[in-house]
Image 1 (cartoon, rainbow over the protein chains, first blue to last red):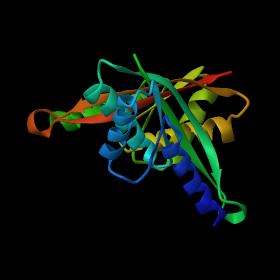
Image 2: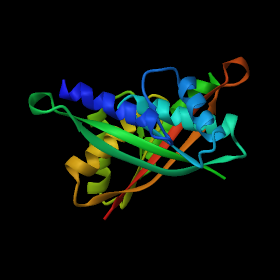
Image 3: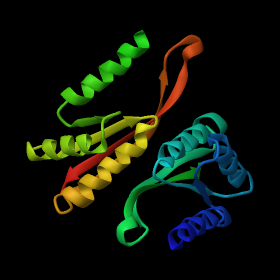
Length: 105
Length: 105
């Protein structure tokens, strides 16, 4: 339960914090749109964040935004990877994470 | 056909070039072992490369190598992402790629 809440919290944080897009199970284009909207609302950088299997989708989102939608106005920033420990006791497992920054040129 | 060959070629290149591990459909631990072996055979850096859905697995491989197997002797290097165009004509599609460098400390 604590586990599920943790997941929800980070997703909430992702959508409420101005410059983060938390990539999960929705179609890729939802997150592409979210990024483009953040930039069009004046953000100077957007962080695309994902865990586990969504990591591939996060890379897709970044590539589509910077190559197809905003090729002249956005560039790649820092890319970080890491590990989060999810759950506790016997349910504990490690999940890889990625954080990719897109910056206005 | 040309497409398939291209895929095979890059996989071959991955395994034959000294310091690359091309992550594909095998279990994660196969690639972890491949990395650890490269380092134990004297490599100073190993590049972990993947395309499409294998990107998540590539991040898992890097995290397992650097945090569980070689926490004191290996550190994260440069991370690159990109897009490859696969196929031609109507079959043409874009696939995201990742390249993560692990360096001996």
